[in-house]
Amino acid sequence: MPVVRIDRDACISCGVCAALCADVFMLDPTDSKSAVIERFRVGNDMAKGEIPADLLDCAKTAAENCPVQAIRIE
Ligand code: SF4
Image (cartoon, rainbow, N blue to C red; front, side, top):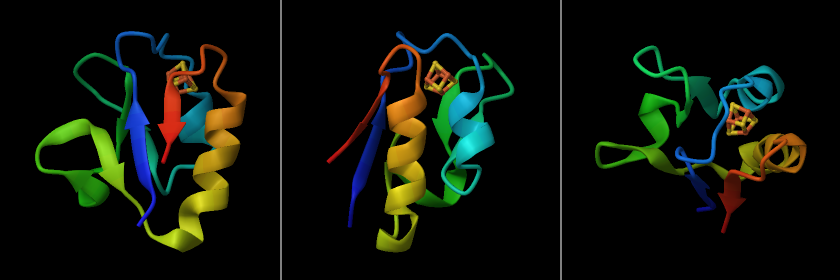
């Protein structure tokens, strides 16, 4: 399964990832930074998720459009 990682320290809360790929990304209500939606999180880490292959393109589009390159997909 593809793994998504978010550098939450780098995230500037612009919301682009959540707008482009709401099936994978959300803005966490506590700090308004990007987070993987709960069902795909690895453990309790909102910065890391395992996503189904059919959401890979959507996650990649979000990563490519993040203005600070805070999203990595492995
Ligand atoms: S697109 Fe990048 S900077 Fe914007 S909210 Fe998502 S991770 Fe943060």
